[in-house]
Image (cartoon, rainbow, N blue to C red; front, side, top):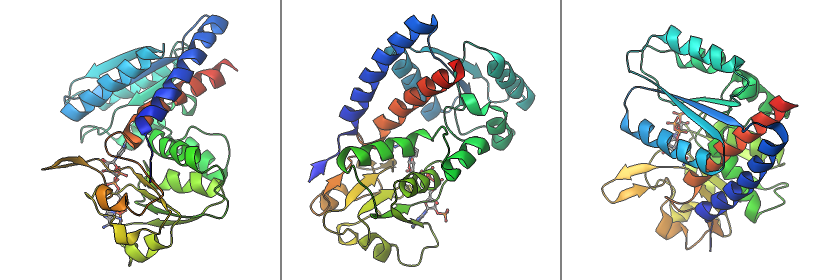
Length: 281
Ligand code: NAP
């Protein structure tokens, strides 16, 4: 079984980005800039934002975190996004989710200029991805896609099953696999026989949030299995795939942690650099 080492592949991407950012700085006299808006004091959000800032600094991006208290007015946030949209030193804007209940996520996402939407959540980016046009792709599915392509260059005609249909993971993942000519089945909580669907798959991407849902007897021999799940359990962080048993059947599998997670951050940096280049052009 091939252990798909997301940590190593993400480090390679970051190294390449570092070189590219250094060249871009020389050429444009300006570094790509990533601005993150963090609202409230949720511990996981604070950790994610710090990780993003550290990774951005390491590749030479200009990074900035704007913090607001939990009770900040929605208008203050929307006005700030407006200001950042106009700021030529800012190439990427990310508002860390989840937001406090009184702030409308849809309004916030739609306020970010599509050209600076490094999360790829704006409806224009979503529409462009589903139409097969150039777009910014959400970081986690983009990371999964790059991991799959690293081990399987030609996906033509492969059967892929995506477990989960969230806007964040499942739906963009489906689009990326479709673009590669996979025959894609997207499954969800109302799917009648998930095991039977998975048994057909050459590629499985599990983005559910249920610890070790995908078992060894759901897997076709030689399948590629990508585990997006991050679940806190008594035995620590586990994915949506029962790693120990599935690793005996699958051709290739991502570990949790150390699989998709590091790719998400690497792809955020990649998206910021891509946004910068498009804005410069
Ligand atoms: P989400 O928005 O909660 O979506 C979960 C999806 O799973 C939904 O579409 C749901 O179906 C489906 N589902 C629930 N129970 C199911 C079942 N028994 N069988 C089949 N499908 C089922 O979750 P998400 O934001 O996509 O995140 C999924 C997981 O990925 C979580 O563990 C999260 O922590 C992790 N994650 C990891 C990263 C990373 O960087 N590695 C990034 C983001 C998220 P319905 O639509 O019918 O409800």
